[in-house]
Length: 295
Image 1 (cartoon, rainbow, N blue to C red):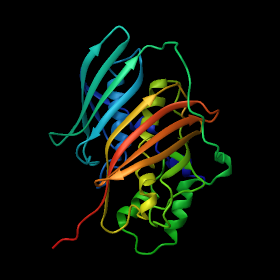
Image 2 (cartoon, helix red, strand yellow):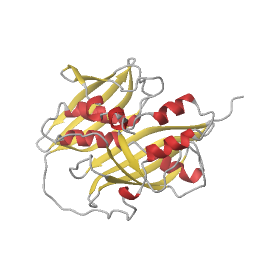
Image 3 (cartoon, one colour):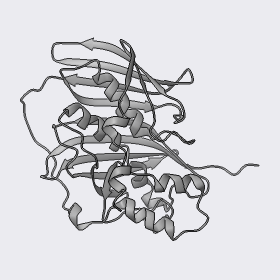
């Protein structure tokens, strides 16, 4: 549709923060309707808050915990602790607060660019993005064919999507389908221009890195996001940045889930630039369980 680009959320703008004190920042959610905040948003804004206190180094790793569901109807306050400014490395801790309580915390390490040994895993051989359909369009078409969908599901699926994703084996949000191996390969990129600031390319890639992970762990179990009684949430998230990159270009997000147990699923991800360069790695554990019937 001709209006799609106009409606698409510009993450470079909506993730921006307001400085309210030296180490305090405030962020908002673009879609402030009831529900919960997408975890990638809090990751991205927390990294951006840390970057506001580290202007001259690049993040090489972050580790974070999701503590409480975020409320999209109120702002988030980000408190940055300047843990260390060393000769080669800088460390920051960020606490995200709503309603007087922590909802999320992040630890990130930054360093100056250096030369060193190099090796990397090879990118999987999969179909290119230009051979695959846009997942957002596929989901909207599926939604149009279904009756009696929950209103929250309709709102979630019909929203403009700032991250474009394409896969040869996309999972439906509404149909578990047959059991499959816990693996997925998805091409993704930011739809709107990010600019030249490498910090923002990392921030937006961190935002997108929370996508599709738990659904990869769900594949063998024939469940989906709307399965009655199914409960899921991101618990923790880690990310390592290996190379600079342009996230307006296509990247392959290759994921696998080697384990699910104890009501949790564990997922690993590798993010490759289109030329095969491994630019980032991800790991996440998420809640993944069926609620027990009441009574």
